[in-house]
Length: 501
Image 1 (tube, one colour):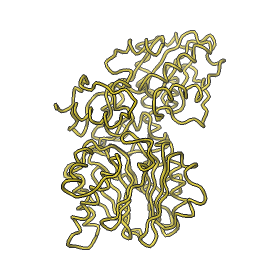
Image 2: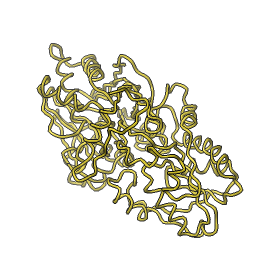
Image 3: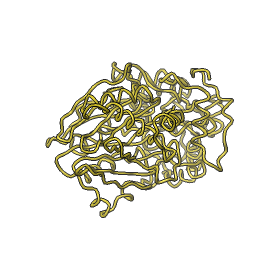
Image 4: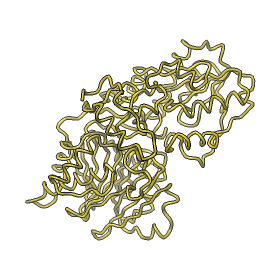
């Protein structure tokens, strides 16, 4: 999960891209980067850290030009400690191309071998985004060999990319002196949308809130498999470049990743979370009699809409029982269990009066590793709660994710191979209620009938690309695990809907 943005304008874009990245900061806190273009020359600055820390006045002065792109990074593969893997990436041939990528390539290892042996291209990092850039560059070179670069040539190159690349990818690239290219994988797993300002500036970004927050009018989402090419004078060309496509966005975007004020693929994230609260309420009633619940308390912040709707339907008070320290990053994104566990109490503090002597129903957006949930249940007890019930607006996370969310190893998933009762005992709650998978899909999908389905692989083990094997999971785990961490015996993974190796 990363946040990406690209801009073509008649005015300098460095401040605009910076502002856009601030609006995307929730999608990645590890690193940030901006590249701008002036007179066919690229100017780039990128480093590890938050947007406000990476860019200083001197850095911004070094980013001239009326077009450019940016990214906030949240690594799921490669070396998270390396600044070389911060994006954007650049390759000088053909034309000069810079690229930012949100997603995860599931066949990056095979592509890297092809690039070395057949395409004669060198990959200098462990990042799958650099692999993707070089595949795009090779396809651009091949498509433009005997003809001038044009939108038709660019679209032919993207068609070549779709034929070679597997996994999830929302991409924005700039071709030096020519224009901006944006495209999305044939399943639309990761989001991407397009908008325009009153002065004609064209922006492409991961979430609609980025457009609205920078004064742009949302026009539409980039369709799965579609490519959009924006010339430097602002002309927009678009074409479907995949042989087959279907809209199957990542369900976890609506559960947790996206901002609630965004609209992704025609679905309001806020309304989707309200709907999940409604379906969760039915599950709660069947598990815990409402008379035994005194108050409903959300675990900030993504769970708030679901918790509010659940409380309304149960006829119970909704209270804010935890105060969040906004200067601690999202714990889901933090590397390592030890750092994550330590950060929970730095991030949240309980308001004792909301817990003392009460039976509390805590509502979280999801339970992934269980580390945060266990700490929060204990905090509620220490604050004086008589009983602590835990409800998750998402179903149990039981399977590895291979499309760009930091949950690829099953050993990190508290629900993998365990019953709900076993998970309840681990986190220490008096009752544990999970959302139902089909109910979650209906709650989100009802908001846009054009959505063919969802990638809910971390919940149901169904990988929408249809090409994931146990061997793929094992290899992706190896690419992610760093020296000194415990490696998992992935031969024991059970993937009920994966292609046999």
